[in-house]
Image (cartoon, rainbow, N blue to C red; front, side, top):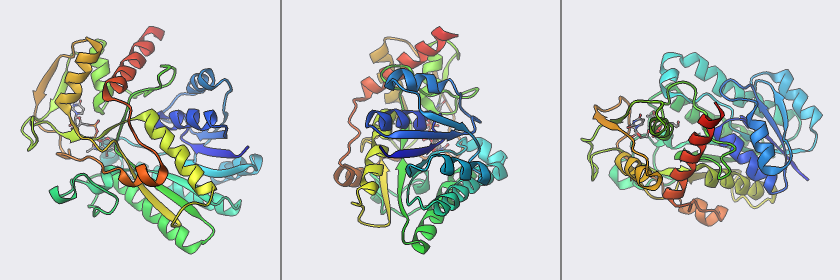
Length: 343
Ligand code: UD1
């Protein structure tokens, strides 16, 4: 069976994708430097699928280590490149760390792929490349104009998309799929893997679940004076397991030679926007747990509203993010409870 190299495979989206790949019969080799994840994630994956994925602890910027991986695993047919730093605030404070980690790792992966004649790559990008789309572009599809990134993190996504396009243009044997994620949330239904935020969570859902379990005193909701129905920001929250499944579809499409263009681009979202208040209220309803919150001022750099038009992925990949939000929020809560019961 074909083997997929998953960089960043012990991370949040990576680990869920490894599970889906293995359940579809793919062999996997994970490369991760564990800078923002834990090797114990491998046990969670093994408990779900029944076998442990192959794992190499290495940095994707390390050419020699990557070369070694491709040499040792000569059955690799495609790469899914997740490995990247992703904290927006940190990227503003330490831009060079972000440009090095995120851009150098992609360059190294592509160089090593070319050396070993591996021709397929899936790249993990973000809806952050659209910034705040004008009203006429909402919901946002793949043709909406990109906007200047608000952070070095966002800029690395744009730069990396360009690097992929230029490299594929120059090397006609290469194929790439760029996936622009909206807001991934939730955890595997087994509660054996999920999101493991480092320190104080910056993202909404881990903050909600940590507040619900009593680890944080209260959630701060950043702004209720936006031009939205309830005044709080709107996002497209996508279940991480649905998102993971889209990666399997993307790999299958490239491997079967079905791709229409050398670089294909897909927005991955539900097509439905939810406000921060809707998320918090629905979480309280489905779990029956109170989440104390306070409305505070806006967070700098936040986008008012963005959600996806996911028709292209729906039709072409034959994929849909259709897990009900209640079930998704419940999975996040089960995972939080599981995490704390272990500690
Ligand atoms: C953020 C990044 C985005 C990145 C994504 C992945 C920004 C501007 N965008 O998306 O580039 O790809 O994370 O991690 O930082 N909220 C609260 N209270 C909280 C936390 C969040 O009210 O304690 C609100 C935010 O104001 C926002 C929504 O919840 O309206 C979602 O926030 P978050 O989970 O941080 O995601 P994004 O900001 O959409």
